[in-house]
Amino acid sequence: MNIPIPIPLTDQYARQISYLRISVTDRCDFRCIYCMGEDIKFAPRKDILTLEELYQVATAFVKLGVRKIRITGGEPLVRKNIVWLLEKLGRLSMLEELVLTSNGSQLETLAAPIRTAGVNRLNISLDSLDPIRFKKMTRVGDLDKVLRGIHAAQQQDFNAIKINSVIMRNHNDDEILPLAQFAVDNGFDISYIEEMPMGAMGNHRRDISFYSSDEVRDTLTNRFSLLASEETTGGPSRYYHVQGTQTRIGFISPYSHNFCDSCNRVRLTAQGRLLLCLGQEHSVDLRQVLRGTEGVAGLFRHISQGMAIKPQGHEFSRNQPFAVQRHMNVTGG
Image (tube, rainbow, N blue to C red; front, side, top):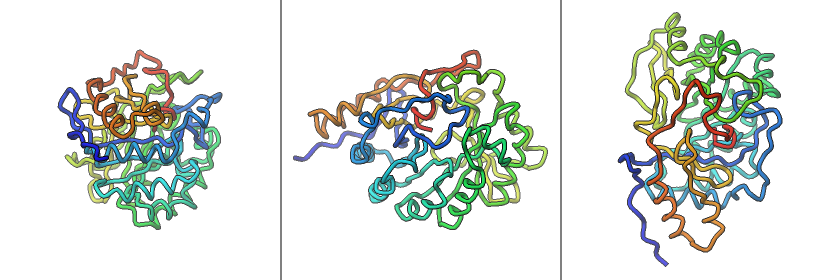
């Protein structure tokens, strides 16, 4: 049966949705202090979308005009048979970019297979270059293993590798310059991210640890000449070129420079919840649709109807200890 393809996805604010972030798992082999609590409980496996279901949703979105898909988690590379999904996505003819965000822990063995599968660009989370501090911030992470993974990724022909660093006061704010220098020395881009207010974190005080993008940029200008750029990768980063290098420095600033006006993104959680906004709870349950009787036409219909409830933006405030209950590993990092 031929299913009529709806027009490209556009929300009530005339923003066309061209970018889908897919979380393939809420599980991670790290326990980063800004992402999840120590006593985190993961979703039962029966509630997690199968790889086939994830592919079905991705295919629908591509037919609806999405041209960029980012695979996230948790840590996406701990998902069993993830390369199979990446290969399937890499063959979607209308998809222009397949990107993956990783903590780097599995890249030593998986960098080559994921590049062969079709991943174009790679983002790697790296918040410290000090082994002791790295382990403290991730609770369990091994910096040497991550650096070996980054080196393995460098041996592949990814279109770009970008470092993502969450800067927190009195945690790693003294590493702003070393992290930038690491990116410059290796020909990477780097984005500095203001900590997201996602989920309660026990004793972790976000109001104390907050470090603004403006403060980061001021620190960087002590060593580097930054030239404002109009370039974009389709996400929320505002970029600057580091004069005399290949490196771009980006700033993702949910508090200090709200990026909602031009939002072109939606997120699919590993449990099949289509989140219409990072910092709001507006959502559509696609797992119910996938496991129901409505078929492909129902999937198109529910995705399209979801655009009517996509909010204008989040409402992050430094006076709130957390904006939403769900943690970042559930949201999709």
